[in-house]
Image (cartoon, rainbow, N blue to C red):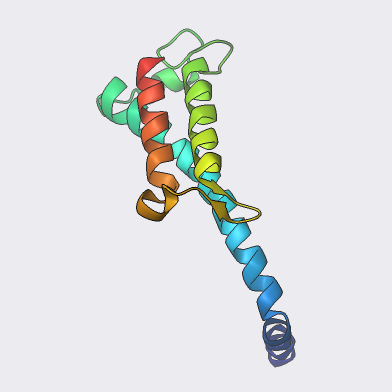
Length: 122
């Protein structure tokens, strides 16, 4: 049974290579937009704002240091939007069109930097 599944998977990969490659890069770039948006906020919050000190007991406390506006951190959301917009401005994931700056910096690094600084400023 396993060998039949492997043969079928091989045929799919063999005959649909171009379509798979086109979708693969779009999906990868879309994941990059989402993950880059999270990394900048996490780095700013963990390394600068909290200075690598976490209080696990306060995570479940509704009036503790992790209780934001109804459980949502508005500064982090603003930074996420800024990071996502920066990423999309440098590389549009579906059509794979890129800005001139993308050739030198990629899209992730400027997006992470934008979110990092926006989160620090908010």
